[in-house]
Amino acid sequence: MQAALVAGLLIVIVLAAVGVTVSGEWWLTPQAADWGGIDSMLLATTIITGIAFIIINLILAYMVYRFRSDNGHRASDEHHNPRLEWSLIGMTTVLIVILLAPGLFVYGQVVSPPDDPIVIEVVGEQWAWNFRYGGEDGALGASRNDLFGPGNSMGVDPEDPAVLDDRWVPGGPLVLPVGEPILLRLRSRDVIHIFFVPQFRVKQAAMPGMVNEMWFTPTRVGDYEALCTEFCGIAHHGMVGGVRVVERDEYEDWLDQQVTVGEMMGLVDEPVMDEAEE
Image (cartoon, rainbow, N blue to C red):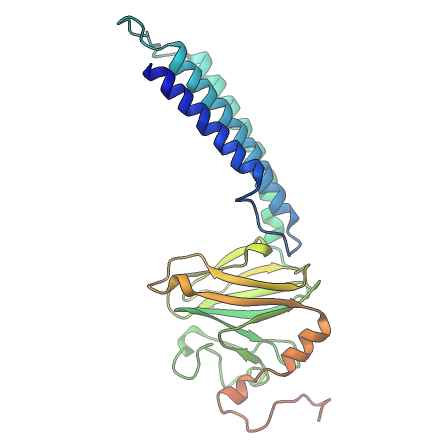
């Protein structure tokens, strides 16, 4: 009776797991960036591990019921079966290769940004995301970790002229033009944070004393949320930043309205303009 109950419970677990997966209730959020390869890898991993999960648990249910104790007799066991052990090792090796080989190819793309992306700096702090855009020259001025402090939450170098026209967006939102490659450079001024927008399919750690990078191309106009997925303190749950993907014209209009680093730090009295505008 107990064996039948355990076997039945295993079958119920398998059916429930398959049902939840097929229903899509806990499936991926709609994709909003061009990382279809990551979705393909997640789907392949789910299918392969799902099949293994079903087979193993159904075999276990069968074994529990088929070799149950009957009238006081105990089932015999076999301690060594080299043929079975080598077969399992071989199948496991093949499955690992199938899972890892395509993943390494996709990973190679993830760590290889295009030649001319829009570069934006992201600085995590307890408990907010801050963003810095390049100015009229499109390039970010210098920054150093030892420059973090009151009045300089981005750790920029005020002696670098290229810093003055950078656009400073403390607390966000992160506004991006649709259809253009974006390279985020991530830093942290206190503890480890992880920047993650589920719809973009990539995430990266913001580490104290380091600069990490992640890139993607937004493909869908809309509003999203940037989450911190590393426990970073008592208000970790509230470290959510806005992300907005817009058309190019709207992006440029929005960027022109943002305060410059020079204005924010009191380094210039008038808005910074390039020679062409002057």
